[in-house]
Length: 542
Image (cartoon, rainbow, N blue to C red; front, side):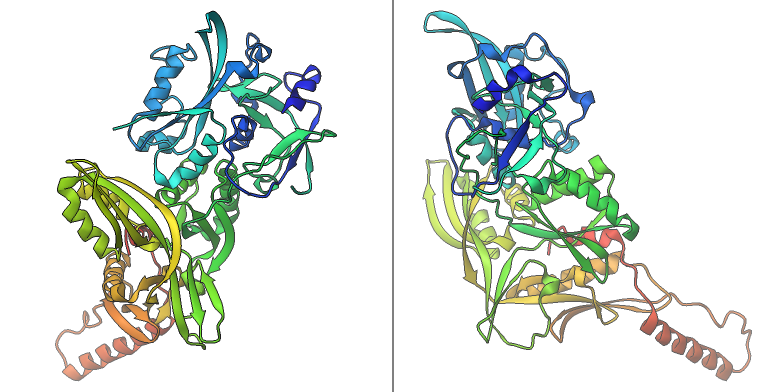
């Protein structure tokens, strides 16, 4: 980034008349060098002129690299990271005490409603300190990171730019872009015109798509020779779900909303897909269930999108008798009656580390056993705390494991996991049929031992949300050709005998038989509308 310094004299306050190249680097490893900070400019990709606040009193030239400190705040959820960030902003006079609302750096509505940090936020602070017997001005770059395990990607790339942390305890083808603005977050966007070595800030470029660059790419001035940064490990998606517009005509609006949102959340993968039940939509990959839930909420709050989500799933591998393998991210893509026999099924697993008060050990052992967990370690940290390690199928923890863990331990459990190998499992595809027709958006993959229970729960939930029609609706759960659960929504019946006052019973019987035949025809050709609430209910557990 030293090249930015050489170009600083030609910079203007609202337009920067020089080009930057960026290099898409191969993701070799995490790099912990202290001066990778400028890459964080890519975490904010869309800026508007109304957000800029120019401060002519800021002179970044007075801060050489030995007067810059880059640090992050790391802790579990609800341990006060954002509150500590508020106090630091006040102590350095970056904001006035009591100014604005608490958790000042939590900008998203979903963050304020849930009381969690979703996106890592950066704030530049200035502080005068006695250093080696002399009062000196220091530039402090603070990164407030998320605490939930779903957002560990945000934390990992934050650490790569830090010299230290506050731990709260209890090369490819380059592309040319014109830069229109450079500045720092103070903590609002503040134009400075330059960024020097070791400084953290933002760069506004002429990129039109998030696919043109990713976090970890190297920016450098045109005609300069630089060694690209090593970049970051590509994110590995743990949960997949389909997103469809509630109204089919809103597909383009949803597409635009997802594109804008992924500009600010590069850890989401998006591919187009179609469903016979829901029409055109998107198959999205997320880091976890909370990450998926937050993404949905941001779509609705920030972009006014109304979406239907399918049941979340994880990537499976199916091996057939001819030796071929199929990776399945969408259960609908797995044939219910394949021509070739499935010989082996593989599911992803994780190594989960759980720290709990000793009195909850029995309940947690039962929970992990119900989730098909294999105990790897069980020890006591001290007289009051126990540590357990389990190998768990990823599918068993992506839906409601974390919430149940917190509930059983009154919120005192600490939970983290890391990816492990695939393991063989007896898996089956569970189809939901409405009047004999499969609903592809409701298909799921489950362990055979749980298929009966899951199928029964799904059909019972659907019965509560599907409205009665003039014809009977049969709801079935099936594994291949075998029906394992069934519920029936009875038809609304018109009183065809209302005008029959007495008379021969034969005429009444004839009218009832005629009505019965008519309902059979309606059942064959009638379509069943599935309300959004039914899909939302399925998301709560399967």
